[in-house]
Image (cartoon, rainbow, N blue to C red; front, top):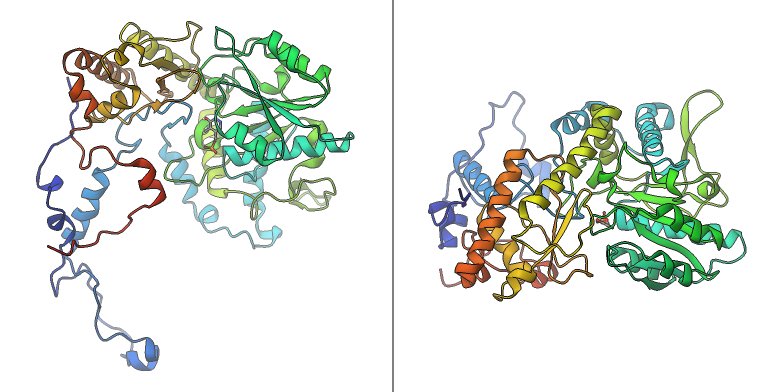
Length: 498
Ligand SMILES: *Cc1c(COP(=O)(O)O)cnc(C)c1O
């Protein structure tokens, strides 16, 4: 059963003009009620700014404009259409209750320049979210300011630096496993540290002996993702923490994969000194399209004095307020207090689920990934035999024999009505297929996905060229993705010859 998207119809016409050039003079999509005030002379109101005509503004009817934008929206993919199995990115469904809460008047209309006295509700939202995240991570204090995961990493390493400076000197190196997300080394370099690569062992975990050999008093911290980007839990985490601490270094955890841990285990209990969270991954706040995100950083007590200012405090009179008097703070990392709309959504998600619901979520995320792992075993190469947590990484080794690579398989998946999985990451797996279903998906959706992936594996045997040339069902096939990002064409322009 293939879920092919519709091919050429009049909605997906080859003639762009038919789609975009809809204007004809005199059509309008609006109707104003009769005037109930004296008519004013526009010239006296607008002066020089008054326009004689509409210029090149399109003139279309209501039904035309509705259909135009609805049609455009169907050319895109969204979590509201189907599974979005991007490993590491955790594209989970954003429950509608989050949006309902965010649209409450007191939440939607709050302004950061409001005095504290009339911002008590907003402050309480931030305080309650902070307390929930501290409880979930097992840490002691938190800042909600960072705008994304990478920004959280930056804030975290600034904290590491400030903490070690207060102890005498900031040290020189950050250790990073070879399976790490690219933002980790980029962050370490940005903060002025040298990056030292840490090799993984054959099970896909940190090689503890190698770590012990590499650890010395020049190492400021180890940046570790747990479970790591292979979807494997670092079982030796206590030993890893001990090795770091024995030489005065810190254990930083990249918390992007907390979807596998929430309400099951707490990083603060297994030796982590500080970590970031991605609210836009684990806590269902929406992401994609460039943000906004939210990357709170949670820390142990010793690092608390260095947190960015201001921090939320309960004042002597019992009200909430901001404390700016933080002499050791690393400064501010974000305008105002962070992306407030993400806080409300994350808190709505946490409170709607409750502790047992969050635990269920974690278990379902891990179950779903393992269901896919079993379902695709044999059809795709599994480079690491170690059990998966919330995501599973295959490789294109079997398909590469026919000249089909992970990118081709991912593009073919689009023809089956799914968003591609993450390709070519983590770097330690050549031709990686990194798949993360999240807990959002039902067994029915997972079965469709497995069927699609198995069908593609068969197609590779029968007709590898068709897979290499996919997608076949989209308006445009393979884009120059770099040019699309660097030189985006954001406006329709009528071709000069039409
Ligand atoms: C997503 C991710 C990041 C970066 O987070 P952003 O919010 O995209 O900046 C860092 N590490 C890992 C493992 C991730 O998956």
